[in-house]
Image (cartoon, rainbow, N blue to C red; front, side):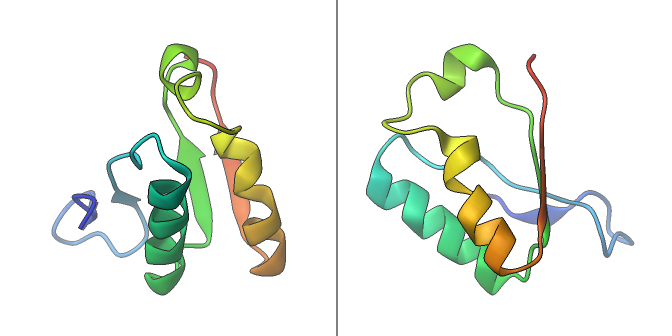
Length: 78
């Protein structure tokens, strides 16, 4: 699901995944999936153009989840 996979076969820390679709329901499902995978850090590499299509601020919608799970978030304006 979400093309979730380690960066290499030997990798146990760095994983990649596709972005959620542009609906609030899809975003919530994506977040739940990442929580189930015990992801504790997220690095968002989407361009501003891509982020603008979301019905809410995707990056900031992850902050409460990150806070409750003691996770870290990072974002870069590409």
